[in-house]
Length: 471
Image (cartoon, rainbow, N blue to C red):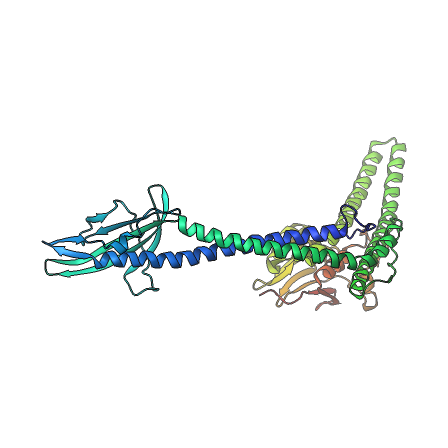
């Protein structure tokens, strides 16, 4: 819910301060992302540069391989050894293996390429680059395969060159530091500019916040379109639209409470009078009759209370649907489950309950509300169908539900009225006049169309058509 307070210059917690803090947070996230991107771009650039150096060193060593007396020897030239020196950033190791895998020269136990390491396509060489660990440090390695075709020795030798990651890290950190300095200075300049712009733009809100601050909590009149910038007028219009919907909601709630109170007062008064009358009787048989009447009245009150709770739940369900909380449901499966649950009641009343659903029919909806819709339609049909009659539930494509009965039906001139709350065609009916009202509200929440028509064999046919089925 929108809240406004008086904007004072330099006030702690002002809207201007909140905007700037959020902007600073956004800029901080951008700095983190840019720093992360700069670091990994620096690492990629460092890997490209240093990988080329590793491969050049491996090639220099490969050029010095000779076969003598059937054995491979490594004559490492000075230009290759020059890179194998300590520096302030890291260290380089090498290893030469003959075709049999025996160490010829260099350091022992350098990591071998992991299985499946691909050959590089960046250089015309049988080389593979990979990461590993050597002597407790992370290293970057190259494995160069060098064919040996001397008369006394024939096969593939392997040269491995490894470098600790210090130099690469130093280069990446340098790029990261430079990037963060530049972005930090840019962010400070942007915050200063935004501070000045927002300070000027928020001045018209001072009058609007004063107008809201002076209102009473129950004052839901539209806000006046005070002299604000053109960009702020949609905000005022949106607030007025929201206030109008809120006032309408409060009016519906007040009307609902008034109607519920009116409809509850009569059965409660009748129940109280019947109990008081029974207490005056002296015969146990009269007491039992009083208790049976009280039980019937209590059952009606319980049913009415459940219907009132159902109406209250519809608003939250409609809000969940509007906020994207609808689920993909099989309407045929819901109808089948309800039919099984209502079969005993239909049998007790001597009514045949049938389901016609050939295949799954998918709709978008809120499961609790759809179950309530089905329950009210079938319960209403069973209540108005005489013994020996039929009630049929049909689920058709695309997204159509029908409930048809053999009851007396509803005249066409009254079919719109039955969706009003507490409307009863027969004043002697035991119902509260909420069943079809609940159905209508659930259809409204699902944006479904409901139609009342004559049944095929008399009675009433209720058709509910949902929107386009989900893919």
